[in-house]
Length: 227
Image (cartoon, rainbow, N blue to C red; front, side):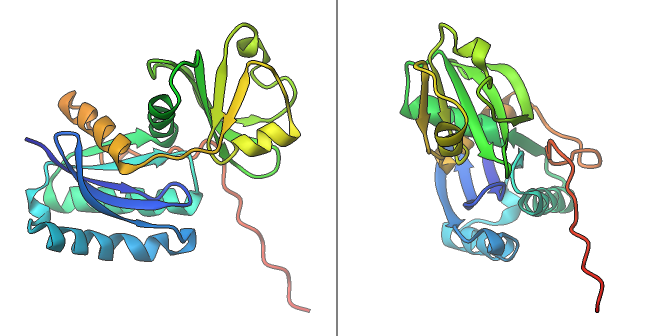
């Protein structure tokens, strides 16, 4: 029996939840991305009060590692690592694109390939490519949208593009008869199953060296000099 705490602050919607043996039990969500940092710790405390258990009862902490919002990823990862360090519990990480793909395969079966797209501003997206069994074909990376985007894969294969970058790709960058688009997300049910699989396989991360999957450098805007 594995009781897992999961934390997800990678995208617009944040989650805090509990699952047992891959089955989602309860959780909270926050849809105000700017408030993710203030949401996580109070939500965790309330979650354990509501479920009548203690945080020391957990067997591991799982967190979405990215890509996603730079600040959101830091919030989630630091919260998860802090709890693991204090309680001496293992850390599990799951790529955001992998969770997105698990949800898309469940909701829209029958495609040859699944391509999650996270809007990375301007013409860029964070993306990867998976087959219909959820196996990684192309690793997570930052890509520039263009008319040639995944053109070779689109030849003879039906691909579902999904996520908050899908509409941008559909409207502005390419069209192909083998391409379908959905602005679909995921829930804690998919995250629960993936985290439990990693727990069973003992795919634990080193607390000292695990970092979020940023995929590209973050640049701070320099303040304008005072006049």
